[in-house]
Image (cartoon, rainbow, N blue to C red; front, side, top):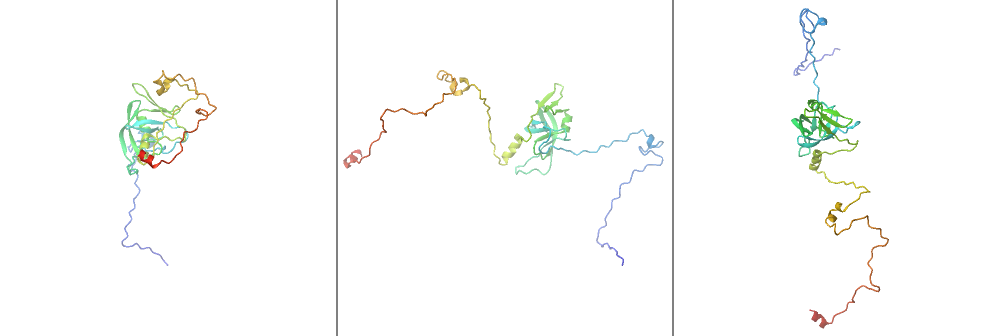
Length: 266
């Protein structure tokens, strides 16, 4: 029994794309430059180097591992941002914009000519939006090479050569596992309903010696308060008030008033 395959009448014909044909070289011509009179092994024309387009890449999307990163608080576009100087990123990136509904924008935009202030001077750069978890801004090789920035990783600083003098930006060194929340991210958290607490920490040494001038209230009455030589002495007994012997609580027994006395009081 023979099997046959029948194609339906309404089936569309599939078009197959043929592979691109190789370049045709004239007989006797050089395979390198296509000119007559010599062979490819004797050709002195260097072929044009075709550079492959490199897609933007970045690796610092989460928490860093290994060597402490070179990062700090930098004014980017007029706002203080937690910025990473990353030589492993091909482009520069910024945190993606968050809408009022706490949803990320669907498209990623590019911010052109954004000023980055270091040492009181503006350094322009282009920033692409990306979802960043730890940093607000990542300055990659495009910005670093544009301004000839030298990243000193062991000393956690950034050097920028200028004609009027080099600019040195000292980054912060953070222990691993300690998370820093920048002002931009704190504002986002507060808009989403997070609670913010403002605390002040004062470090007082045990051997600290206070003078009268150190106490604002006492400073204005130096003629009244004597100089404090130290803390008050410890008391053995609880503070009590001495009374006269035989003293009893003052009390008066209640009694009924006669109708005449009641009328007199009224």
